[in-house]
Figure 1 (tube, rainbow, N blue to C red):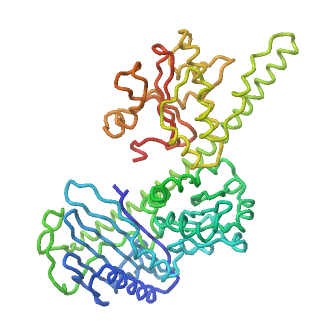
Figure 2 (cartoon, one colour):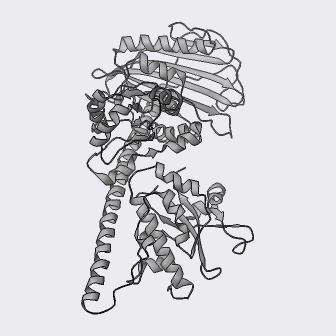
Figure 3 (tube, one colour):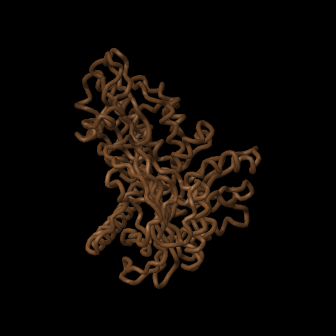
Length: 554
């Protein structure tokens, strides 16, 4: 699993020689801050603490992924604890042509049978970003990387827009807006800086000054951010295409105010995942494992229970053929990363196209129903019954949708309304809300028929054969049950055991495998429900929210 790994890959603004020198200074400052000894600038293995070893290889010339010789310098700190090894690795690599690249990894290698702990952002990362004048890529519009957010003033908007729309952009850009009637400096120091701290090295970080907000949002009509919200703009931004806006997640201010630390973790989740799963720059791909040569400066007592570590033998040099095998595996992994990135981009595009088509279909269906009514009246017949006023107006948010659940007499919402409201923080695109509302309208129509034994089957069958005077919902978005993998996984199954009244089940909950996909894409939100029309005459909706854990989201 890669959930716990921190990975930063940035381009340096300096030459290889200067980058190695500056990186070495930052490593020494970092070690000193942790009360470790200064190893100097010598190659080899150094004991820097009672249970800590630093391996250095500062003058390597190796064959990289392209087959050309690359200049490489590397540091690796291994800290031995009863829980496992904390490993921090820093690589500086420069191909014969092109920029110097810097990669920083931090992870825990746990003892056998234990789970790895999530690695925090190393303090070394923030020092490196500023010292190296780092950028997110080497293309002309590559944005500068900083450990803390850069303020966007009015005169900076055009430059930031160029960065956002750059087709060569590698990393997310996170933009925080400012709420009205607050002191900007206080908001920056007390909310924005701690919120974005977990994204350091993983995304380009900006704070939008109040004076720049209008120009910024005017240019990004479909991708706005305002009122204290924070938006994560993924690579491949198309500012002219409204349906694409849902890819670029929004976190509302109330999520920050509720729990700033939790909000920081939620915000960093996507940039961390992308950093580990995205292809590495060629200068960093396929490098063989670090082989620390030279004299060891002192012995270290190790924990023999740590998997792969034996007393008195911290690291074992690989034979040449093993190095070739490792490079081949790294290159294969790089190719898998490319396939994954391409597949995810294609999925996002298809999801946006689907939502756009759904909106157009919905509008066309409304026009057809209206024209049918007018034609019936013109022919002297009876027009179809109009919807009540409160059902004709779509809600504009999930918060409003939850508040209006009592408009559906045969639907009972037993879930956590907070989880539904949090969907408003994920996108400002209205398709999700409209589709969820359509689902409720269709469920209500189905329940009215089902309690009288006139539905002709379950909800999926109803959607495949919806009567002309009832609300429709796409049958392909109705899933009758979860997969066997989900049903047999204790954690995932437990997430879907959702509340119902005791007259439905004395335990007060049932497994709700039946669910509806809200929006396009495999990880779009879900609505889980239990059909008890043949019993209590109700449909119980136990969950509206982000996709619960499964093989794709875990």
